Length: 350
Image 1 (tube, rainbow, N blue to C red):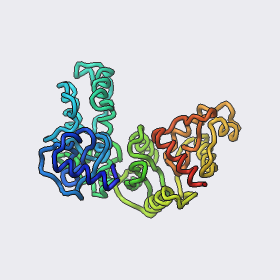
Image 2: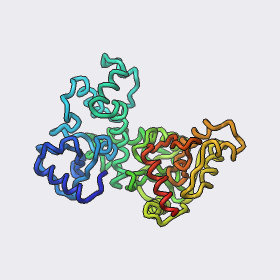
Image 3: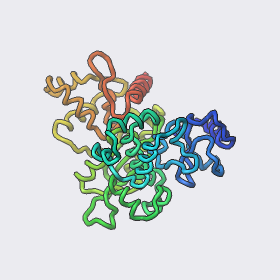
Image 4: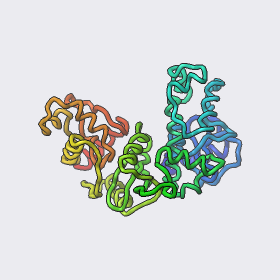
């Protein structure tokens, strides 16, 4: 989400003027209706305070907004093939659906062709789009702090059962439907590097990730299945603590996170994560050094996999591990974020 006030006011004026020069430059998420639009949308204009602005459609989707039916923001700037329109319609009719290659056969098209056509127009694959829409449903109520049932109309559903089905696909069954279910609370956190989501109870932090991280949905599912938990929007003392500590971290006022953590993984993964916690801020290690320090000198690839399985971004600093030749290596939150974090901490230390 765009935070620069000058830029936001510029985009808002473009929205008021229906300035076609800004079509495709930004997308406006309208809080009161739950839709996102491009600059020339003919609908009645919202108040400034009811607008969020995004640089991409995927960001708007992950924030819980659905495409406006009047201006069709996903149709700009190219004419959209009828097949692609049909695919978008299918997602809106059934947002909780997880698309597999076999599903494309029913449309009479090969999965690779669908991916290529969709990405050519939108810069993301159809599966990415469907995932962003699906995750947006769950993340919207987390972002706004609304109760699930109150968020259903904004999410684009005509019935409470439709919304609950889509939400529970990711976050688990609502507590009223389940016996002996552990309840975890999800909180939306805006940061300089984009929104994050925390999942916690009153004792521990279980997950902290950027909302656009690829694989976040599966991470959440594995965690709640392991814990037999349901996740609902809300804050605990732990989620408030990590939100405050993150703010201090980005303001260069905190060198060590104190939030209690709960990590689930194999003994090897836990050993890797403990080793990561020993890398001081402003310092870096390599996958090879970590392998040697754990007396597993031939397990460099496994070290990388354990890094990738870390569910506590920034707090367990997997971003401080690079390749032996100095290249950044991988990072679930994206290499641009990894580079930013390392530079931030380098300057932080000095």
